[in-house]
Length: 272
Image 1 (spheres, rainbow, N blue to C red):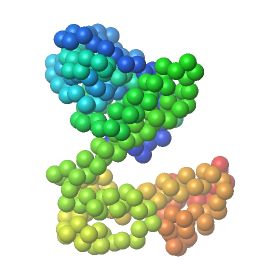
Image 2: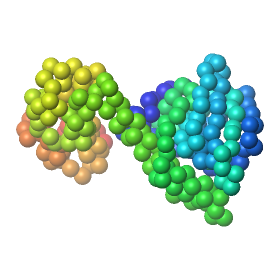
Image 3: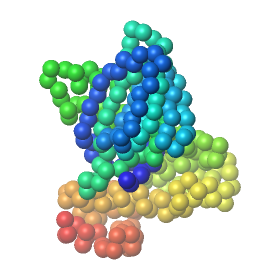
Image 4: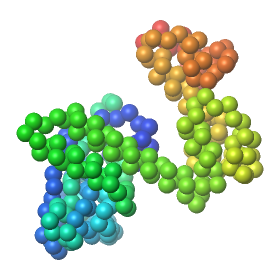
């Protein structure tokens, strides 16, 4: 099955299907075995206890109370649950399938992983809202899907932030965040390096390690992807799109767009 890292889910256009939610009340010290491959992926919020997982490769994983665990579709495992709070559910389960726009299923990890060590109030409320909506007499799947999308996006964004501020990239975290959030920014690499108190060469090297691209390549790629989205609406001219994406010179925009896509912006627009 195709794998897309959880941190990239934040910017991905994907579909959710086969959503199911329930509270789970596990007896203390009980063992559950998933001997057949899971038909869905799931998120488990450990709200009233903790768990210990033994994966099919022999790896063991301990999940503290308050954590959120992601388990991928197709996974097999064995787990033992331990209750801590008797008047609430041990876990809240949310199942779903992740699909790309062409219908291909994908997962965001090869095996169960803890995606939130301490869920906090927002995570707790999201899980409770989902399970409450799912157990209503009239179920609004569109509303449930909206909350699940938000939940997955929030977790993905949190992982992205952790990655940016990891020991490998924390020195250029401000520069990375700036390029990710300021599409029209005209800051040079020298400006970004100064913002991070590092040399230009250090900024270029670390940024390339983080994204696989140079800062300039990354900025152009992001602008062209945004330009394609705007052109897809059919409501803006190529000239208007160029300005909206931060290209002051429409002719330069057309050259870059053709280099990136193989067609000019006008040809792309006519082909819609």
